[in-house]
Length: 213
Length: 262
Image (cartoon, rainbow over all chains, first blue to last red; front, side, top):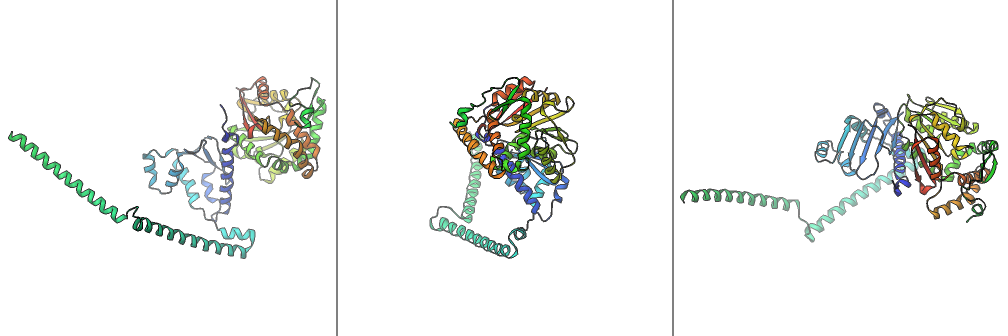
């Protein structure tokens, strides 16, 4: 079987190496330590994403997560896509995604849930981590600058969004407001009801005419 | 074409029964072992740093590819032959778990010592054993291992056919051998660039970092004299391995050969 460029350049190995380094680095910074990994010792979660031609297996060994790109035996396997994986953040989406064939779970669901719990409970004090490397004062100043920047960006984002909707709805009238949409829906429902009533009346009249003749 | 190419055509096998290659030189078979040993005694302390420098860190991906392809499972018994400073052993040791075992074997005591110190410093002590062994005469019982790997080691072995037969003997039925080794780049342009790098830059890096340009000149030469992908596959078939095949990595600069014993 001819090898693809991605195989030759070892994209799978590069991605798994990056993920392994980043995940373990983050776990090392986690304020709750690596205790969360204990119940998952020697458990493997495999994720098969539609966008990737290879699976990603996450195995917990000795308080570290090892990532491999082979189809290792696993305790739980999720077959899904990146977009569905993001949707999975909302708990109520699980059944919906399975029903829509956007997610297939094989094996012990608890293993997947525990892996997800670890990701959700990550609590990292970035400022303190930064202080260890560049000192307290520069880290504090950088933290302050970062927060200010984030606030400004958030404000700018909200403002741009508001201005853009104003321009699109009121000035250019390219899209309609939620209220207009609701009125329209209401009118459609009215027409539907009237048509249904008319249809019933016509049925009655047809039956009546056929009796007379 | 570089001067090296003019004088030493790639894989031009000029050895007879009593002689073999040491880089581009033809030497007596019993002489090669000591010559290779002196190269590795010399580079052992700087081996890891040099690997990173010479391959721009890509050797880590080649080794990761090997581990992914090995299909290692908890409880497996693995022989990391010519394991040197223990990169593969470190990862295998985690993956085979407490029930499994990894044997780090190398003919060179300096490399083995560096590997043992490194792994112990990483806290890896439970399931690793260290054996100084010649790949041609493996000191293990028949049908012992689930997996044997030899990464960047086979080209330094004096009698490769004998070593492959020895590996076949100690593999369990169902076991597999993985040979990760420098090979022949698939494209002529890559080949030319690789030649230039190997013979002009590599020895200079060796001189600067490890203060030993000659050893790195030997490494470059030994790569050129190593059998190409198809030849090595044929050698594995001849040793008894089945379902043999290879995958080229980084354009064929390195190839991973795999074969099973059934």
